[in-house]
Image 1 (spheres, rainbow, N blue to C red):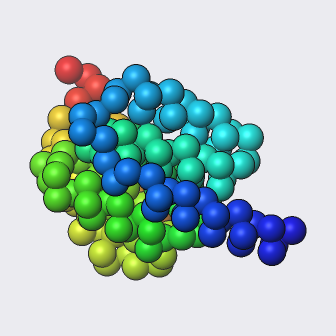
Image 2 (image 1 turned 135 degrees about the vertical axis):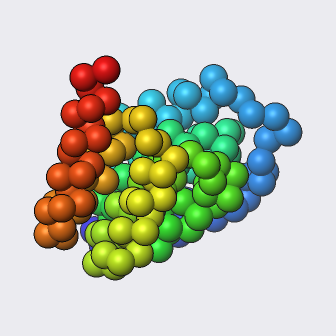
Length: 165
């Protein structure tokens, strides 16, 4: 079974390499369809199939952070952190002022055990989403995880203040 997976992965990579590098224009409908198929494959535990579908979706719409986010989820499950970090770094180049790529990078670094770098990524995300309670809650959760109760409480208070508006 392991040998089959290796050959399947190799054939998949060769197939993806042989396809055109990128479409002349983004086909959002096709990207959406592939994204949904990738999500469904992930739900069924078919991570390799999900990866293929999501890579094809990314090829159709390379700048979409929702596709990259799903790919990062696949790489987190597969413990392929470096693949995820490469994708996120590409996304940060094109969406540097958006919180999502920084959150994704923080999650990957956290799973790698690189808490200092993860902390910097989470702080960057919070800086780009000062009024987004979801982002701030995740950043606060990270600080709680690493045992920084003061920072965790600070973010918790910010979330509560935003929810009471």
